[in-house]
Amino acid sequence: MSSLRTRLGAVISLCWIVAIVYLAVRDPAALAKMSPNEWGDFLAGSFAPLAFLWLVLGYLQKEMNSASAQMPFAYKRKNLKTRCSNSAS
Image 1: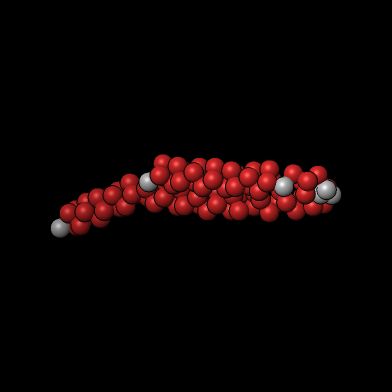
Image 2: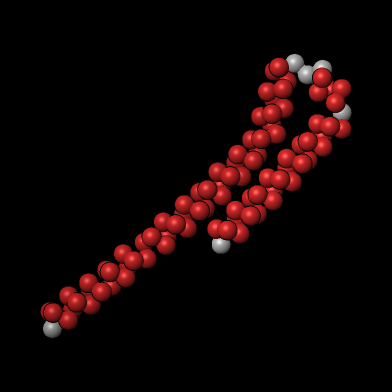
């Protein structure tokens, strides 16, 4: 599942970057007229959605890893309860 999310994130990122490059190449005169402040706004607006996408994908990956890491503890707890109930009998 994580590989699917990673691939999906990579495809979305690639499409997003292609769209940004297309918009930038479509009107190069507008890019030449931009001040440094406008360049910063353009770049921040272009790449902030990608940063948020990867933040969400990373959070989902961490959640999935922590859930799978808790499985052995649940198994051990179940075995311990079984041993305790058997020794009490």
